[in-house]
Length: 232
Image 1 (cartoon, helix red, strand yellow):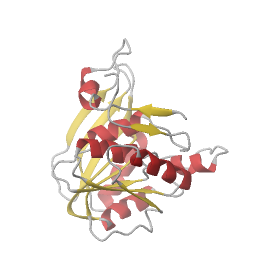
Image 2: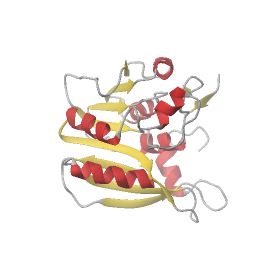
Image 3: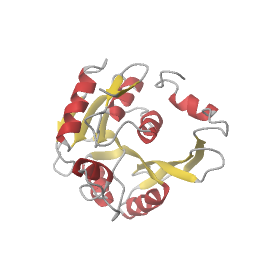
Image 4: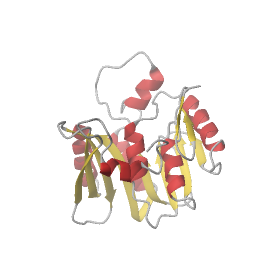
């Protein structure tokens, strides 16, 4: 089995359409968990985000939702073999998911391709394309499963991120924190890390560069992710 070994846990991803990626690691390390007691991970895949957030805040009650059966089973195994087997994973769509109490924090590394050419793998298409989970549905899920003080953090490519910001604003959410990510100093911005809430505030903006021109990790990226990477 192929997997990704972190400092405190290992993630197998051979059964998942979407493998462990820098996007997921960025969001798992970056999302604001301050003061939160409960967290919902929408589309958990391998369980990576849930595991990273549990490592960061061991007292956090985490529920993860995954629609793909193979990914769901792999997430179950990854969590069961981790130091935090009490992470709750549900095999369902977020559209039909219900929970007794609203969550303090919602996170997602969602599908983002709109009307783009699809591959032969149905599971990979589901994981990458918005057919099964549109941005509107994602926003509605947050609104349905949150309270007035909840936060919603996600990562998207820059173009899709701009579209999501517009849709979220139209739905009564405010962008509070926006971290734009570039691979190296000479590359364009490629990703947007965003946190939304129901509370209007000045937007906290920043730029994060992952690697230096010599391909070494930047000081900022190391500071963000050193608690997770095995050799960092």
